[in-house]
Amino acid sequence: MPADRARLLLDCDPGHDDAVAIIVAAAFADVVGIVTVAGNAPLDRTTHNALVMRDLIGLDAPVHAGCERPLVAPPRHAGFVHGESGLDGAELPEPITPLDGTDGVEFIIDTCRS
Image 1: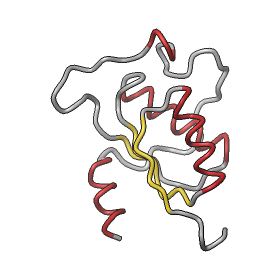
Image 2: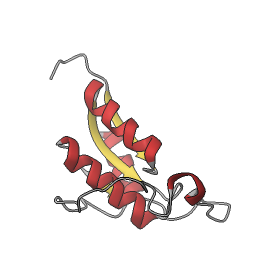
Image 3: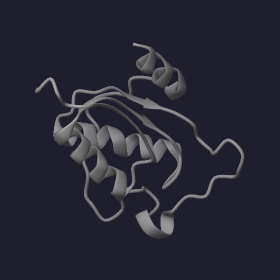
Image 4: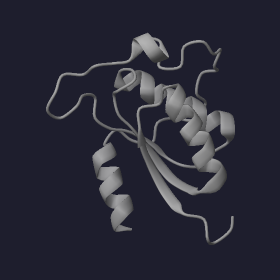
């Protein structure tokens, strides 16, 4: 991997848009981790989607689950855009590699400090 590649920590809610973002980031940056949050779909689905994408593209980066709702507002998922799973429309395999952790905030802090 070239030394001039940017180091990138993704904080995302993988629906179709962030699935593409993960692929592009892996191609052009050193992805040091992915933290998932609820958004396009509930947290369990966005985390599942991140794990599936990591496996599909062979990305060697930890995935940590983060916040299951916004800090100051009720959750509003985008099932009308991304489907209930966040990635409706694609036949995806089950993830092979496990979740690395469930404290996404601490992972972000620790990664930035290191």
